[in-house]
Image (cartoon, rainbow, N blue to C red; front, side, top):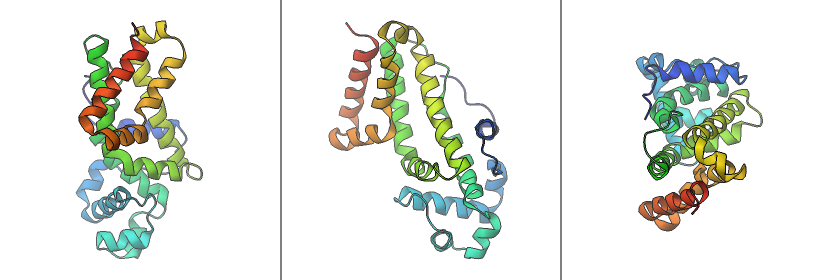
Length: 211
């Protein structure tokens, strides 16, 4: 698997700028060095992970233990706040979106991809809901959604270029549909992690390497 760039935050910021996110994004290293900001971002993530896709500043203030005025001082709008959240989360899951394919035959690559997408779905379920809720009215939300969509498609295209060239144009879209976060999580809920992993591997192999 390709190594994660030394400063993946810079990659995220540049990718968002290319997609029109004009709001400033807080540098992850600076964020971690400033306890108040870090507490607000951590509180936002906890609320998001508990099922509130766009928590209010009052809720964030209560969860973080700082005043609502302090939250506004750190993050004057939701663009700044969720930009900071993204730069905090992205380094943790960047390896799940690596576009350089691992070595091995199609089964080996499928097994790696399924494992990474299951991890990605589990670790970003809350943030994904936030991004989808924000996207219609937020430049940052729309840019994050576009970045995620582009990256997972590029990953499939690069990892299975040979297989996709012989299976037809619909195969890549079907792979995306099988591995989208909500679909993966529903399957895990229905079957358990081990059976879900096996089912996804078998399904992808039928698409990419039909007998």
